[in-house]
Image (cartoon, rainbow, N blue to C red; front, side, top):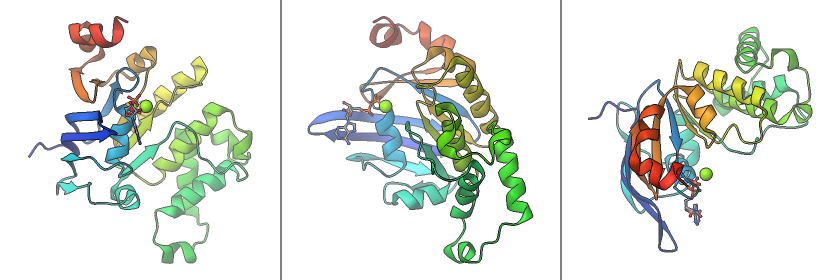
Length: 247
Ligand code: ADP
Ligand code: MG
């Protein structure tokens, strides 16, 4: 009993004999903001693939929630329904729909097929969409075509679409890539805000971004945890300097 929301326990996976994840163990706690850093190929994205059911590990266990449900036997859609939302690097919004309709569709999505069938745009849903638009900084853009948004705005819209499904855990892979400094700063604020009501795990290379998140950091290297702690602590760790920062 770790009390963790997500428990990764001794997980390994090989691709063509190469151990991408090597006896990886670490926990994510409810409501925490948690950054994952590490060199290219360290296994960061593969970790998210395993948690979301996209990749099956060769060994180990991944447990979720108070009931310690094993995620390894669940489908990707079951895992999403259990409350794990994932943001990919490339935004996947519906370009021809408005910002509002994208958020509305994401909101409907979490309901049963029966509820969707008899769906009517009601006041409550509109309010929720407006609240989320405020959280992601797109209140002034609700009627715009999503395809006309900037790269950063599309990323925020996709985060908003995930938030509308009320995940307990949000996984975000390299959100700052391709963003301007202002967009990156807004993304930090948005993720910090999102982590007030759910756990948020962020993979990122940009050290300034990680510093601004001001959260627990796990350093991955060759598929295992190399160090964990505050950013100040891990950047002083000699192993981290040797394999990651010193190069
Ligand atoms: P990171 O996100 O830390 O840069 P990845 O998790 O993407 O690293 O990749 C870890 C290693 O596993 C890399 O060597 C990568 O090429 C390999 N890898 C990841 N996914 C697959 C896959 N589906 N098939 C084969 N090799 C993969
Ligand atoms: Mg990656």
